[in-house]
Image (cartoon, rainbow, N blue to C red; front, top):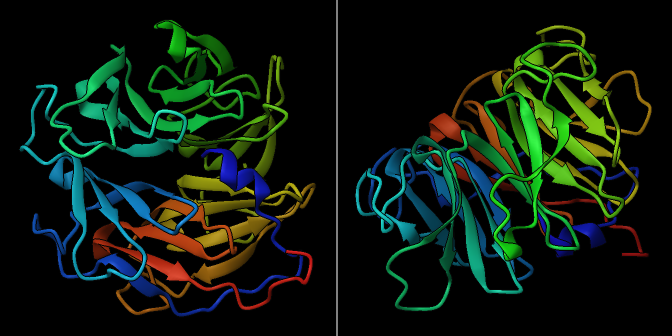
Length: 317
């Protein structure tokens, strides 16, 4: 997540279309440019360009607004491998506008890499290695946050070659204590540098304030399940200017919204069972919004990205 996302003010009474429109993939799983193979994390730019970690194709795909037929390979795509021109099951991606580059969680290569977006780029460079990364975020000071399989989240001053990072969440072993995480996945960092973590194995979302020794549960945490108080493997997440949290509730095949301090969430899209209908998902993973408040969801086993239009837009937007 990066700068434009801080400007998104979604009205408290917002509603979204219940039928999604496919903006990427949706033509079965495969490696053609009109296909995806298990999309994971995604990032939506100011111009509604969608960049997707195409996990099963070992590449990053880009779809421009209006071109729903074919995407473009912008990183990897040279089969699975460890070369600098290759990726191995990437799980997340973001755009660093300052350098006009992609920062990618190249998970099964245990590294974070950067690829320039300039034409002619044929390989990336390693920013951080020997890390079992899953999710990425960048704050307004351009610090990079990475979740990893060590049940922790670290912040990196990557511009200065920081390879070790500073612990900002977890780091006390795999567990369900307030100072612990279990398979942390996706991240969001707000302007106060509060870190939100989808604590996948604990079926909850945690918020860690800057400098905190433990986090607080802001969604789920009531065990695995489908009640409105529960999540079932939390993944992609987003926080708007009101502090409202949006989370991909993966195995409940829905996206939930939790207002600050709420004891339960509401389902904003999905929740209609697993399926391939326009109002259904087959495992929700990545999640993002564009500047107009439209919602984008990576629909893993339908091999597509769905956009849900914001139906109510405040005059203050």
